[in-house]
Image (cartoon, rainbow, N blue to C red; front, side):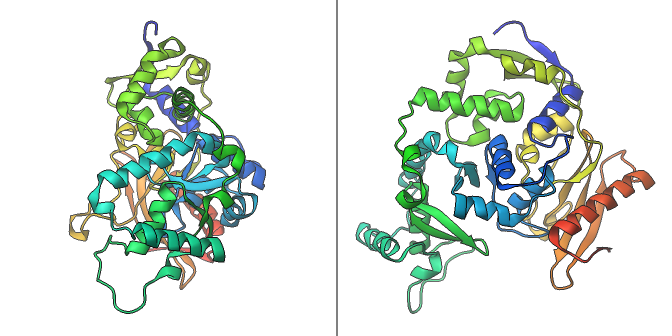
Length: 392
């Protein structure tokens, strides 16, 4: 790597927004092919069952293409089989073309169970074979199909019965795959009946796998420290990631990234990304309500140093200790986070309810900015199929 390049905070923010898929370009009609391209561009889309307004994965995709509708995601998963579900930093959907590079993740997850006794509430090997035999005979089944008869031991909030943990374990290690979803309930089938053989049989070396993941992470982040590169996929250790960066130093460029408070962060990018980073298209001036699990939001440390936006998800914080609320949405306008919004979809009344708005420090919500927020809420209302927007 040659002498470091200095990247201003403005260009760094623009590059981060653009690389995350939140660019200003008008989105095309969201056909299944367009949706598959979008998921491929993002690398993965994090899933979450909580549906305060809409589920995280649907919100993330809608933020990038407002023609998107949730049914299309299930069409890709259940009919085309062009995406699959698995676990990176969390549960995600990924393009099926990722699978040859992903099979190593099955081995890593098996080791997690082996090394972590608290996750070993599993059925016996004999019972696991019986479980797999049932799925082989009956087709895709969900956790409820294995619910034991009679009284069972009461579990904690995060506890799972042995059959459920075993289903997840077999999914983690690649013996089962998610065949479909029904009201977000997973139905598992034998992986061999879901995953195309041409992908599972592909022979990928460790070097090829690491190169693929690191290059793709750089493309989706724009620039990254080795730790940010590792955290993007969560499929390798920091040591492995640093080693890859050292071995591929000739193809990387060192960058001094200016932070929101004027300091410098030592970062890296692919040399082939330099042209884009130095002349990245500006973000949309529109105000966007982003999901708490949005790719731009997920790395809190990066979010803070790039945007000066200190954001935490407080759903697991006791109510009395919350600074804002249970599920609060960041507001992005152009290249700045201008506030936080507490909003929900009241499905009984079928209205979008806005409970609170917190502007960021020194940010005023005057007539023009409020109009932008109202416009975004109207778009969100249409996406949810709600009748109106109601302010508390």
